[in-house]
Amino acid sequence: MPLFTFGLNHQTAPLDVRERVVFNAETIQQALRDLVDRQRVKEAAIISTCNRTEVYCSTDEPRSAVSWLADYHSMKPQQLDSYLYRYPQDQAVKHAFRVASGLDSMVLGEPQILGQFKEAARSAEAAGTLGLVLNKLFQRTFTVAKAVRSETDIGASTVSMASAAVKLAERIYPTIAGQNVLFVGAGEMIELCAAHFAAQHPKHMTFANRTEARAQQLADRFIGRVIPLNDLGAHLAHHDIVVCSTAAPLPLIGKGLVESAVKARKHRPMLMFDLAVPRDIEAEVGTLGDVFLYTVDDLGKLAREGLDVRQNAVAQAEVIIENHVTEFMHWLGSRDVVPAIRSMRDAAERSRRHELERAQRRLAKGEDPQRVLDELSRALTNKLMHAPTHALNHADDEEREALAATLSRLYDL
Image 1 (cartoon, helix red, strand yellow):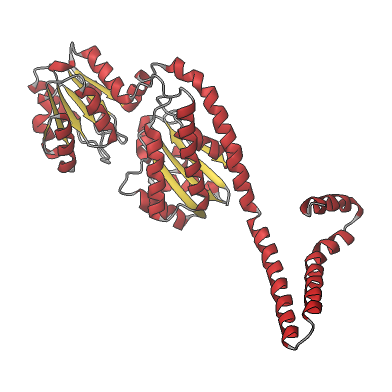
Image 2 (tube, one colour; image 1 turned 180 degrees about the vertical axis):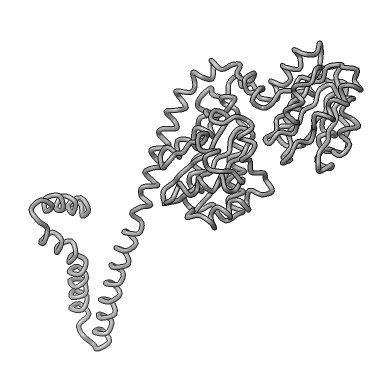
């Protein structure tokens, strides 16, 4: 089945569209099985991050696979169609290599996407939808990303979302050292943000998460404290900076909650970062006075510092990628002839067994071994040569020359 990739990302779809098609970690395996069971899809893997949702699959009916994405998220196909990109075969391979290498990221050269690719492969394997082709694609993708990072300067001067958040906080507050910072969530993005803010020695660092043990791990690492996620309302007013990144399907912090916190703070400014997709903070919060709300897309614009250095490495990276695309497509093409090769070998094996059994019966009767072996070899040779000889003898004038050239190549004549 042909290789096919489709999806949307920060370049093709706004945040309010991207958050509607997110797959969370708890349901992604079920979604993969649903896709394979309901559509003519042999293999499938899904990458779902705050910046992109992409489906990699092996299918003869790409249109139905695309329709599945909208249907799975209770949307009409036309609601997504204008935001989607679709890549068949070699374009799909090239896209995977570029994404994993950080060339298609909101922050050029960011390394987190490679880990997300690996997680997608693990999820597909656990769901039973990672077959030979996608496994080979993902393994080669990891190799390409490693080569791009080690052989080019694509990662030089990379400004991450986390460091961009710190830079923005430094523009709003005289110093972060005097501020209280609240982190909601406990995933990789929160951990990165906590590390960057901790380096600025804030007054207090507080962590809230659905799984309190995970929040405690981060609190222990960064010398902070833990509050229950359900108590956000009671503690929000005590924090100057709030960083949210959870997998919650609905906002955790609403406009009314923040209004109350701002009032309790006597209108001292509050800086809020919503790095989640779907969003953790209601968009209406951004309309409140004394509240500075930034989404993942807002930070992406700020995180493009050092771009000139990395842009010079893009051309190098593209060459590496093109070479690997050619190699992978050669391997993929070779898979198309596997059935023919298997049929040829099966036919040859049947002839071998038939002549061997015939020779063994003659030997059992006491016939001369030398004569039996000689006739065995002649009979086997005649059988193996019958099909190509017959084809050549019965070819018309136009195809005879081409067929003769092919046979010469096949038999190294």
